[in-house]
Every structure is written in structure tokens, then in C-alpha cells.
Image (cartoon, rainbow, N blue to C red; front, side):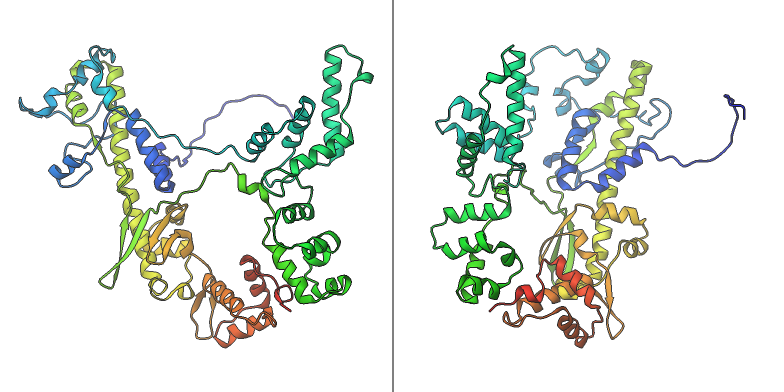
Length: 503
């Protein structure tokens, strides 16, 4: 078969998404804080966008676009702004900067800049914590370590993971640091045989120093050692707990209280009390010094009950209200003063500003439409609680409100709503359903709540098995398999009946 290059013509159709449609979809996905930052950035880069002030809202009655804001896409500067807008002599706009002159002269601004400096916006910087590694270094700096110990301490700190555990053994640490010592000696032209390498005794001494730092349990090599280090710091009597951890750790994990009691020579009740003391310890001490930022949730929507009716509001009071800049619109009317490059710039920025304002309004409308349907569908939940939550899917919402399923998914992604029952993610209201004896469907989230309450109210000495929970739910008309109960129990982080049994 002969290979080569050739040219051919092909006529076909393909779908391409407008870049502005991408922007609209991204804005629909953005949570409240991200949208706020996005609009602030747009205000900085697009001169045709203006911020609506409170006094402007009082004059116009409503913030947003004006009658003049009708730019359309097309050829460069094809914007219907022919009509001149009269400006009174005492109009405050006469006192403003001559933006037309600035644009025509290449933005070469001269004269005083006090007005700009007073209005300059600065974004507050967040305060981040240094994390576990930085905290350990700060503690070691307070100790009187020799230079040799400081080098070894840095090697140890670098091998401690975010959970606070030592990620490798002492042998591996010694091999790594001694290899670095050998390379340094070779680079300095020294005899590698006479170099004082680090020893296992030095490594064990440094490990003891690291494990004495805060938080308690840091530097442990496994879970058992971590818990033992924390018990060493407790003031309560933990003799039995330490012995159980040191000698019967596997039986402790399996909750074999009777076997541990028989081996130690005590009662099962005392063993269980010691196990409760161990359970209060922190298995991941490094998280106490985590450098991750705190996650703040600001609800995008608010649901309030007024006169027996649930009303939906958008929580957008902190979102910048945008409009087209009147100053730039007036400046752009005289097309004869601008070069083709200026015309193209003005047309693109003006159309982008108009599209952004329309995308914001479309986002508001879509979010309200979706939330109104959720409130109507889940009214029993707002009135009676989570057990009355009805099954709901994205496709069902999309079919009812006349939108695509992906649009509903973007609306509900990373969005929160403030309700009389607390601040909840919009995804909370969506779950699969389980059929009941009377033909109705019950939300899987409601079933989980029932299982959680059954476990909470059970007799600790005779906990409910998965089969017993199945039988209780069947008496309430809910048909569910035992494996489904086990799956929901695992999702709720509830142990099996044998592990929950108290003596």
C-alpha cells in the first residue's frame, strides 16, 4: 500500500459552542464567593462595566441594565448608539475625568491622581497557617540541639506525613541521610571512610525527641505507638489501657472483650471501659496542625416560611450589581474620532459587558426556578423532617422546569441553601427512592435516618442486627434487602451489631 499526502474537500456540519456560552455555563456552576470574585475581576478588566451604587438604585428603582444598554454583536463597532444624550451643565458627570481624551491619547494621563488613589481597591489577604511541618520546626528551634542533631531533625520532619506518622523506618532514614553525607564528603574531596556517619543510636534518640513534641502522638510509626504516646501524656489512670494496647492490640480492634479479660485477669466491663478511654484518643494527631484553610459556606439561596408559605430568595446582596458605564457609552457614540483598532476594542468590550449582565440575570432566573421546584416537591421535609424527604433526581427536575439535565447539575453543584432546618447543600435534596408497601417511594436519605435512629435507641447490650432492622422497616411498609441495610450502615459509619454490643 502506497502512503503519501493528499488534499480533499469535505462538506459537513458540526456543532461548536460559542465561547460566551462557556462563560455562561461557568457562571452557573460558580458558588457565591467564586461569582463575587469573578465579577470583581471583570470590573477591573472591562471599562464598559460600572458598579451600581445605592443612590443609583434609588434613582432608577432597580439595579441592572438601562434602556440604553442594547449593544449587539456584529462587525467592529456595529453598536446602535447614534443618539446623543444631553448633559446639563451642572451634571456631576461634567466634573468627571475626560475618558474620551484618555482613550484617544493612548491612556496617557497627566495631572493629580488623588481621586484614583482614594478609590483604589485592595483585596484583603487571607491568613494561612504554617502546618505541622512548620510547627515542629518552631518547637525544635526552642530546644538546645547541636548542629548534628539539627541536620538529623530536618530529615525526620521531612518524613512525617500530614497524619503525623513517620512515613518510613529508622533504617531508611539513616540510609538517606548518610548517603547525603557521603555525597557532601565526595564533593569536598574528603575521604568517605573517615566521615562520621549517623548511627542508629542517634536516630533513636532523635525519634524520642520528635515524639515528645506537640501534638501528642506525632512521629509514631503505627497506630498502636501513636495511641500509646497519647496515653503517656494523659493524667488519668491508663495502666489497663496501656497494657491492652501493648499486648492485645489485635483483640482490641476485634472487640473481643471477654478474651482480653481472660488473658489479663480482669472483667469484661473493665476492659470495655479501658477501650472507651482509648477510643477518645486521636488516631491522626497531625490534623490538629493542618495547614488547610477553613472552609466557609455562604448560602446562595434562602428559604423562609412566611404566613404558611415557603418563599425562595437569592442571597446576592454582596454580589456586585453591574450596568453599562454611561460615561463610556457617551464617549463611544462619536465613531468618527476612533481608529479601526479602537472601534474593534470598544465593540468587543461593550458586547462582552452586555453579555455578562445578561448571563448574571439568566443565572438568577435559573437558580430560582430550580429551587422553587425543590421546595414544592420537598414540602413535607420542611414541615416534618428528613424521614419525609422524597426521592428526587436531576432528570426529574430538568423535565419539569424545561431545562437540560446538565444545567440542573450545574445549578446544584457546590451550592447551599439556608432553610428553617439549617444550611444544606442543594445535592441534599436529591436521592434515589425505595418502594413501600402502599406503592409510594421513600428517599434513601430518609431510610438512612430511620436506621440511624433505630441504632441510637437500641439496647446496647442487645444491639439490632441488620436482619432485625430489615424486619422493623418491613413492618413500617418499607421493603429493603439486608445487604442494602448493611451498605447504608457503612455509609453512616455504624459498626456491626457484634462490634456495638456492650457488656
